[in-house]
Image: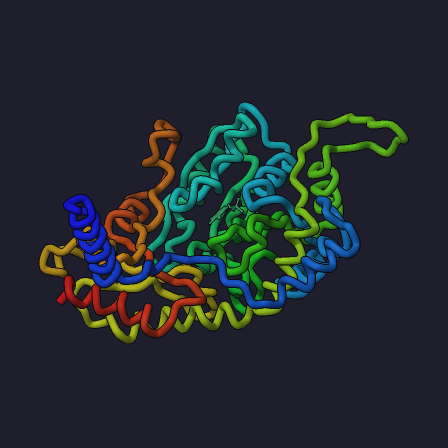
Length: 400
Ligand SMILES: *Cc1c(COP(=O)(O)O)cnc(C)c1O
């Protein structure tokens, strides 16, 4: 009898605790989560019906054509990831041991890692405050430094962070002047434009990503784009184990297994149909945040230069603690975390990462300051008005 009483009391108690937890923890708001449209499944079904469950097939071919149409690129190879595309870009530019590659410091590590895959030396370049991307002055300083020492870097890797186009006119002019090819890491920028021209068409080789957190996703995937057909053909060749034409398996080069699955390409085709909507939704998130939060002391947003159209993949803000009554971006991040809202500091610059310690660096402290004061707010295209209001309410409570 007494056992029953104890047991019932225990169950009652547990359910109280559970329902209390349930009542006090609001649902999680993610930084940027996958957002399916419902148009993906018919293409995936087609892959199953035709038994094209392989890293090639009709969805891959069609996805490549559709990517060309959307970006304005002449040629595209669909690959297993954006990182794979960056790696193949450096392979095709003949980057190897002893070579130097210049890279934007303020970025995700995947922009720089392929330099190390090739055994080359990364040299990191600061950002400028107008777009948060590659600083033309620091880039030129680095190119001049190596030119006077008789050394020509094999490539310059630049990024359009959070979907914001870099200063392409200045950057491309400097690269052309020193005869160094520009590799465009447009992983975050599908749907963005610079003076009307699509992101992904500015590099000698350009790269897109369709990772789960990007503006559209194939669950995981990427693409390599170029105006030069020979480069894209070469990328497809290298991405399928570099098989020479022969009845047996003949290889005269080292290959990779980097092609996109036909099933994933089906997801991508459905996602691409709603890209314009996704860009509009993300830009609306940004506008809501700006409307609700501008005017708070010490708070600023990633600017958008005239002639640039960002996809606003992530909304980035800066909190200057000297103006915000000592409130830091970390205090804001922790306040959001307490409300079960995911926010992240802006990218930690590569020249400050332990793994790249000792790498040469050109510029000042723009990237370091962006990292110190910057925060990405939840930016998914599937956020509800209530989600967005929860974010701004929580921020207003700390940054009064
Ligand atoms: C996501 C990302 C990549 C890597 O793309 P994956 O498809 O995840 O390999 C490269 N560069 C930048 C700037 C990115 O944001």
